[in-house]
Amino acid sequence: MKSSAEKIIHALKKNKLKISLAESCTGGLLANAITSISGSSKVFDLGLIVYSIKSKVAILKISKSKIDKYGSVSKQICLDMVRNVKKISKSDISVSITGIAGPSGGTKKKPVGLVYVGLKKGNKIKVKKYLFKNKSRIYIQRNTVNKSLKLILSSLK
Image (tube, rainbow, N blue to C red; front, side, top):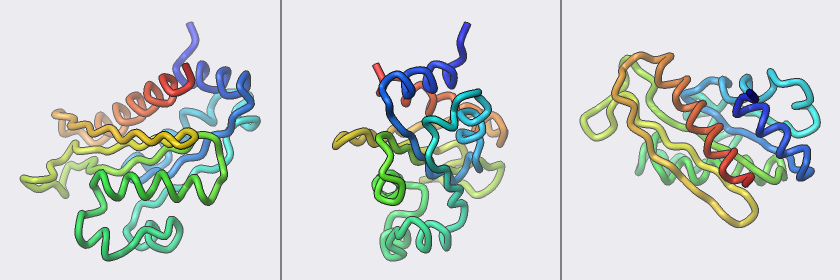
């Protein structure tokens, strides 16, 4: 049975589409999941790991004042990340991920396990909010990648 990443590569190739990513809390795990599939070079355009606030501002041109207002883990920043990686890459599909993988760094308002995943295809943008209860860092990262793959796959149907 094909994995989600294999199905994505197949669908992107079939539809002659390119994908680009801007990842924070997953540190490149989504890019790894996609690029580990043979043939991904035909559809994978760009993967940015914008882990720090400094890189989000410098590379993705996210407004520092907006980060100060909403926090780097927010729907607003996830939206800007997905819009701006699209501007940089000109890909058909863009994905952004920002969250708190833990085990520290969470607050009452933004607990460890809070993740936002954005997807832009054409003029449509979706931002999904997830709250993973298991506080293990790798669990949160892997589950974020799985949710992201499912979101990409559903956008290709």
